[in-house]
Length: 284
Image 1 (cartoon, helix red, strand yellow):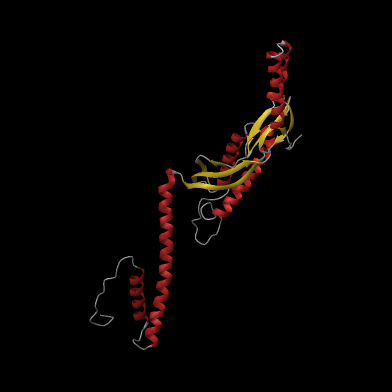
Image 2 (tube, one colour):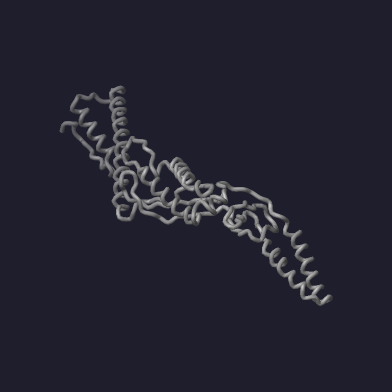
């Protein structure tokens, strides 16, 4: 049998009544009738007593008879089953797994620190009990392997302006979906259902963090300067067109070049401009 089989065990309360009657009969026989043969009732008492078990909410009992899987009891309550069954308890509750931060290389070779938050539960008790050895350890190792594979499939960030490549930092929803699919595929062999998987921590490794911060700052400065220059050029064009349209001043090529130069310096400078009053002509 390679799949889970749900079975219903006998009521434990009914067998408890039977056990009580046997115990009462033995006690009466020993005390009232003073017959030592009633001591043989100990055998069925011990036999029946070993068959009782309890299944709590969101848990199960895997039944095995001399190495053969007989089924799984998932119903809650007090039950009795064949005393020769071995009863392995498996929890069906949802569990959180917060993995250790691991250092891996992203797609372009940068060392990063990453970990994952995983919510999972056992969905197939047969696979969890018999297809893998220590399914909880299997979840830990396979999750770690999935995180390493995911980190190597995407760059941490995209510094090239104008490109839209999916990255670990910017494409969090898509990356988390890919991570969940990868972990689900890996844990299916153990009968594990992945309820949620997402990146919990993501950062550059300490040895390159400061350098990458400077790189990010440089990229931000270049992008900001580009926007400033684009805006300044537009403002200069508007200013020259307005002056010419309103006939405020006649520009020759030299005057126009001088005006453009002065406006660009004022608009693009990172410090406040200091005005200089010219009391002569533009050529003085």
